[in-house]
Image (cartoon, rainbow, N blue to C red):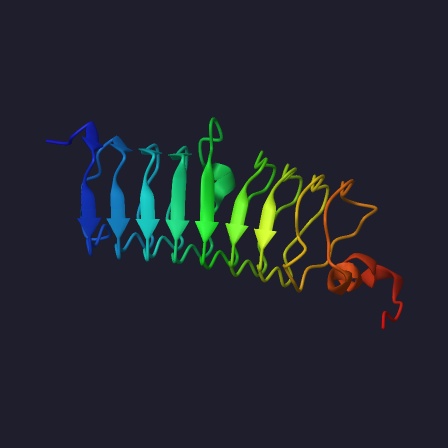
Length: 190
Protein backbone atom coordinates (compact mmCIF):
# COMPACT_ATOMS: atom_id res chain seq x y z
CA UNK A 1 0.00 0.00 0.00
CA UNK A 2 1.26 3.43 -0.91
CA UNK A 3 1.92 5.81 1.99
CA UNK A 4 0.48 9.30 1.65
CA UNK A 5 2.92 11.14 3.93
CA UNK A 6 6.44 10.36 5.15
CA UNK A 7 7.92 12.70 7.76
CA UNK A 8 11.28 13.12 9.47
CA UNK A 9 13.04 10.22 7.74
CA UNK A 10 16.52 9.90 6.34
CA UNK A 11 16.98 7.93 3.13
CA UNK A 12 20.61 6.90 2.62
CA UNK A 13 21.95 5.31 -0.57
CA UNK A 14 18.49 4.37 -1.84
CA UNK A 15 18.01 3.68 -5.54
CA UNK A 16 14.64 5.26 -6.32
CA UNK A 17 14.85 4.13 -9.94
CA UNK A 18 14.20 0.42 -9.45
CA UNK A 19 10.46 0.08 -8.81
CA UNK A 20 10.36 2.21 -5.65
CA UNK A 21 6.80 3.32 -4.87
CA UNK A 22 6.82 6.94 -3.82
CA UNK A 23 4.65 8.49 -1.15
CA UNK A 24 2.55 11.51 -2.14
CA UNK A 25 4.35 13.80 0.33
CA UNK A 26 7.73 14.00 2.06
CA UNK A 27 8.16 16.49 4.90
CA UNK A 28 11.38 17.26 6.72
CA UNK A 29 13.17 14.32 5.09
CA UNK A 30 16.81 13.89 4.12
CA UNK A 31 17.91 12.13 0.96
CA UNK A 32 21.64 11.30 1.14
CA UNK A 33 23.55 9.70 -1.77
CA UNK A 34 20.29 8.62 -3.39
CA UNK A 35 19.70 7.86 -7.06
CA UNK A 36 16.68 9.48 -8.74
CA UNK A 37 18.13 9.25 -12.27
CA UNK A 38 15.18 9.31 -14.73
CA UNK A 39 12.77 8.66 -11.82
CA UNK A 40 9.17 9.81 -12.20
CA UNK A 41 8.64 12.32 -9.38
CA UNK A 42 5.44 13.73 -10.90
CA UNK A 43 2.88 15.19 -8.47
CA UNK A 44 5.00 14.41 -5.39
CA UNK A 45 5.22 17.13 -2.72
CA UNK A 46 8.59 17.72 -1.06
CA UNK A 47 8.61 20.19 1.86
CA UNK A 48 11.55 21.19 4.09
CA UNK A 49 13.75 18.47 2.60
CA UNK A 50 17.47 18.13 1.98
CA UNK A 51 18.90 16.37 -1.06
CA UNK A 52 22.62 15.77 -0.50
CA UNK A 53 24.96 14.12 -3.04
CA UNK A 54 21.98 12.79 -5.01
CA UNK A 55 21.64 12.18 -8.73
CA UNK A 56 18.31 13.68 -9.83
CA UNK A 57 19.32 14.00 -13.48
CA UNK A 58 16.59 13.89 -16.13
CA UNK A 59 13.95 13.00 -13.57
CA UNK A 60 10.35 13.78 -14.50
CA UNK A 61 9.11 16.60 -12.29
CA UNK A 62 5.68 17.31 -13.77
CA UNK A 63 3.60 19.12 -11.13
CA UNK A 64 6.18 18.18 -8.48
CA UNK A 65 6.24 20.56 -5.49
CA UNK A 66 9.58 21.70 -4.10
CA UNK A 67 9.01 23.88 -1.02
CA UNK A 68 11.92 24.95 1.17
CA UNK A 69 14.29 22.47 -0.45
CA UNK A 70 18.08 22.41 -0.30
CA UNK A 71 20.03 20.66 -3.03
CA UNK A 72 23.64 20.22 -1.96
CA UNK A 73 26.36 18.49 -4.01
CA UNK A 74 23.68 17.11 -6.35
CA UNK A 75 23.63 16.26 -10.04
CA UNK A 76 20.54 17.80 -11.64
CA UNK A 77 21.34 17.49 -15.35
CA UNK A 78 18.57 18.26 -17.81
CA UNK A 79 15.88 18.89 -15.19
CA UNK A 80 12.84 20.73 -16.58
CA UNK A 81 12.00 22.74 -13.47
CA UNK A 82 9.39 24.73 -15.40
CA UNK A 83 7.17 21.62 -15.30
CA UNK A 84 7.12 21.70 -11.49
CA UNK A 85 4.25 23.03 -9.44
CA UNK A 86 5.33 26.66 -9.34
CA UNK A 87 3.15 27.53 -6.33
CA UNK A 88 5.50 28.23 -3.40
CA UNK A 89 8.49 26.85 -5.36
CA UNK A 90 11.47 27.45 -3.07
CA UNK A 91 14.80 25.74 -3.55
CA UNK A 92 18.44 26.56 -2.96
CA UNK A 93 21.38 25.02 -4.79
CA UNK A 94 24.89 24.58 -3.38
CA UNK A 95 27.77 22.87 -5.22
CA UNK A 96 25.34 21.41 -7.75
CA UNK A 97 25.59 20.59 -11.44
CA UNK A 98 22.49 21.94 -13.19
CA UNK A 99 23.79 21.83 -16.78
CA UNK A 100 21.11 21.70 -19.51
CA UNK A 101 18.28 22.35 -17.03
CA UNK A 102 15.47 24.82 -17.65
CA UNK A 103 13.76 27.43 -15.47
CA UNK A 104 11.77 28.84 -18.42
CA UNK A 105 9.22 31.50 -17.34
CA UNK A 106 9.56 30.64 -13.62
CA UNK A 107 9.26 33.06 -10.70
CA UNK A 108 12.53 32.56 -8.84
CA UNK A 109 12.80 35.74 -6.80
CA UNK A 110 15.69 35.75 -4.32
CA UNK A 111 16.84 32.28 -5.41
CA UNK A 112 20.32 31.22 -4.28
CA UNK A 113 22.76 29.39 -6.52
CA UNK A 114 26.08 28.86 -4.76
CA UNK A 115 29.12 27.38 -6.50
CA UNK A 116 27.08 25.68 -9.23
CA UNK A 117 27.80 24.60 -12.78
CA UNK A 118 24.92 26.00 -14.82
CA UNK A 119 26.14 25.51 -18.35
CA UNK A 120 23.44 25.89 -21.01
CA UNK A 121 20.69 26.45 -18.40
CA UNK A 122 17.62 28.18 -19.84
CA UNK A 123 16.48 31.21 -17.81
CA UNK A 124 14.37 32.67 -20.64
CA UNK A 125 11.55 34.90 -19.39
CA UNK A 126 12.25 33.89 -15.76
CA UNK A 127 11.94 36.32 -12.86
CA UNK A 128 15.26 36.06 -11.02
CA UNK A 129 15.02 39.47 -9.34
CA UNK A 130 17.04 39.66 -6.15
CA UNK A 131 18.69 36.29 -6.80
CA UNK A 132 22.26 35.36 -5.91
CA UNK A 133 24.64 33.61 -8.30
CA UNK A 134 27.72 33.01 -6.17
CA UNK A 135 30.73 31.61 -8.05
CA UNK A 136 28.60 29.96 -10.75
CA UNK A 137 29.68 28.91 -14.23
CA UNK A 138 26.98 30.27 -16.57
CA UNK A 139 28.63 29.27 -19.84
CA UNK A 140 26.07 29.36 -22.68
CA UNK A 141 23.22 29.93 -20.19
CA UNK A 142 20.27 31.59 -21.91
CA UNK A 143 19.04 34.92 -20.57
CA UNK A 144 16.30 36.26 -22.85
CA UNK A 145 13.51 38.43 -21.45
CA UNK A 146 14.85 37.56 -18.00
CA UNK A 147 14.33 39.79 -14.97
CA UNK A 148 17.69 40.07 -13.18
CA UNK A 149 16.93 43.31 -11.32
CA UNK A 150 18.81 43.55 -8.02
CA UNK A 151 20.46 40.15 -8.64
CA UNK A 152 24.07 39.55 -7.67
CA UNK A 153 26.35 38.04 -10.31
CA UNK A 154 29.63 39.60 -9.13
CA UNK A 155 31.46 36.30 -8.59
CA UNK A 156 29.90 34.34 -11.45
CA UNK A 157 31.56 33.90 -14.80
CA UNK A 158 31.22 32.86 -18.47
CA UNK A 159 27.80 34.50 -18.81
CA UNK A 160 26.48 36.47 -21.76
CA UNK A 161 23.60 38.81 -20.93
CA UNK A 162 22.21 41.31 -23.41
CA UNK A 163 21.19 44.42 -21.41
CA UNK A 164 18.74 45.35 -24.16
CA UNK A 165 16.85 42.04 -23.94
CA UNK A 166 16.86 41.60 -20.16
CA UNK A 167 15.99 43.66 -17.10
CA UNK A 168 19.22 44.34 -15.19
CA UNK A 169 18.44 47.50 -13.21
CA UNK A 170 20.49 47.56 -9.98
CA UNK A 171 21.92 44.09 -10.70
CA UNK A 172 25.47 43.69 -9.43
CA UNK A 173 28.36 42.67 -11.67
CA UNK A 174 32.13 42.74 -11.22
CA UNK A 175 34.48 44.52 -13.60
CA UNK A 176 35.45 41.09 -14.93
CA UNK A 177 31.80 40.46 -15.85
CA UNK A 178 31.56 43.49 -18.13
CA UNK A 179 32.64 41.42 -21.11
CA UNK A 180 29.56 39.22 -20.63
CA UNK A 181 27.33 42.30 -20.78
CA UNK A 182 29.01 44.00 -23.72
CA UNK A 183 29.87 40.99 -25.88
CA UNK A 184 27.35 41.76 -28.62
CA UNK A 185 29.09 45.07 -29.31
CA UNK A 186 32.31 43.32 -30.40
CA UNK A 187 34.47 45.67 -28.36
CA UNK A 188 37.75 44.98 -26.62
CA UNK A 189 37.82 45.39 -22.86
CA UNK A 190 41.27 45.59 -21.28
